[in-house]
Amino acid sequence: MNTIKQTLFALLIVTIAIAGCKKETHYEQKNTEIAAFAPSAEITVNYGMLVFKTKADMDVTMLELTASDRQSVDAWEQKMGIQSPASVFNKVVAAEDSVSKHYENLPQEEQNYWLTQPQVHSEIYNKAHALGFIREVKGPDGNVYFDYNLSDNAMNSVVNSDGFVTVEGRIFQYTPDATKTILNGDVKLISSMKSLNYTCTTENIIVQMTEDAVPLRMSKQVQGGVYPGFNWTQKKLGLPDPYDGDGWYRWDKNWKGNYTKRKRVWIDGHSERYGTNNDPYCNSAVNCTYIIRAEYQELNFWGNWQYNGNQSFSMSASWSYQYGKYTGISYGCGVYHELYYYVAPYNCGGASNCPTSPFSYSYPTVNNAFINLTPHGTWIASGPWFYEAFLVNYASLTSSIGGTSFNYSY
Image (tube, rainbow, N blue to C red; front, side, top):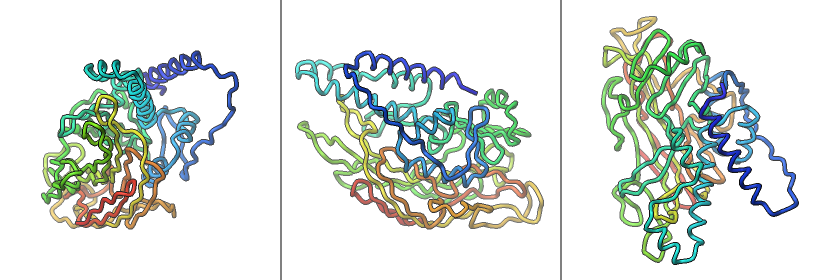
């Protein structure tokens, strides 16, 4: 399943590469072979999508990919015959940095002219944006930057160019505005699933539109039931300069007195129903977002923020969570329910970077990292259904990005 998006973007990369080769004046070429990323889990490919035997295998692989060299990951993707949104995103980052540096090195008179013009983007940026790989984000200060464009951006490294991945026999698709699942893993249902653009639950397909699912993402809130769920997002808000109003720490002012670099670490946490059911206190599936975000950006030539450069990052976290399911029945909704404090079975097979509490990890370089922690993901009941969504009711996070501490406790 070599997708149209993947083919079009690959053709653009080849075209730009050929153009670059024509400009090359060196006669000697270094023959350096890049070793491909080697995941600890056994991963196969079916119909152009990665296949993971267990959710734990996928979670561990996502953490391994985050900590790996981008070139080795690209070599692995080429070997597997896929192209992930992460691969596209990092190519856009490099291309946009090149464009910015080009204009920064122009004579001052030309710089003055281009500073009065709309920002110029690279060919790769324009194509990636047109194909839906990236989206533009407008910050509270009016500044616009680009980011991933998936319903769950943490999946950027394991889905293919159309957002597909297979986990535990189920096919998942993450689009810009929906998360979709084929419960029985039948690839023949992919076309039917693609046509469903509203929140629904059928015999073998669940669709959750993002606009129907995500509660308000501000600080911890406690609400009962599967819908609207819980929220425990944490940011460094209300701090004085050099922090801004959205949790960023800024530094390195230019001659205009504007900060040119910023970074932040924050917790993206919320949980809500997945799909539909008439009873607001009963649902067959639940989504949970529990991600540590580590971000670093620099101002480009036009004064807009963009992911660029890298910062070292380390973190240590411990947490507990709960969720509610019905009891005394073999399937569906019931009268009695109770809280549970773990998801079972969940075994990383002894992997040192299993994303369960407590968890510690170090990353040599990051600029837009997603560290997924249990119980992040989609959980589909095989017996009694969910009464309450997930709630991370305790967490302690200590972290450092480029030497600046971001610590949270609640």
